Image (cartoon, rainbow, N blue to C red; front, side, top):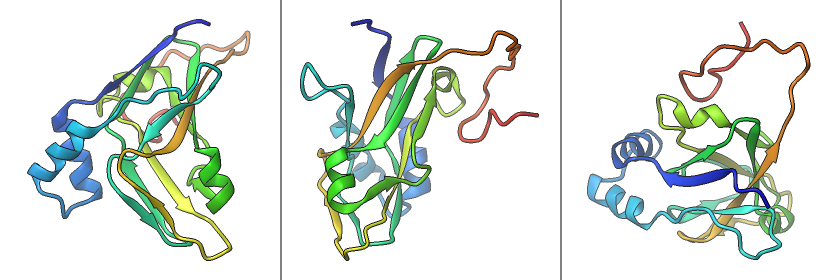
Length: 171
């Protein structure tokens, strides 16, 4: 198996800025505690394709609710690879938990963005059965899978990324 990537935490200042932007009620002391408890994604078994992302805080989502979660994680990977992010399959099956953008796509050059490549997850409880999703801090809630990709023979992309979401929209 090829080893093509490495997960890291973003620096504390970046995490604190992004956390305050999402959850404005948190104190810096609380944010520091959350940051210290962040676990890097990992595979559960040798045969697992997905790297589990762990909730940095308790998450409660009633049916129809959405939440944006700053994970504190970034992924450095070789070019020609992408990290695709999905909800954990059990949560999708039991609660219809979904990524708000259906599949998160983390490009290799996102690592070098002005936000340090901080990976956010926007998840939604799209259940139709009235079930509330409850995820405890430290529990797996999403999974990322690294995949190699190709490009067309006439591809001439040369622009450099400078930003996060939506920063690579064609001109």
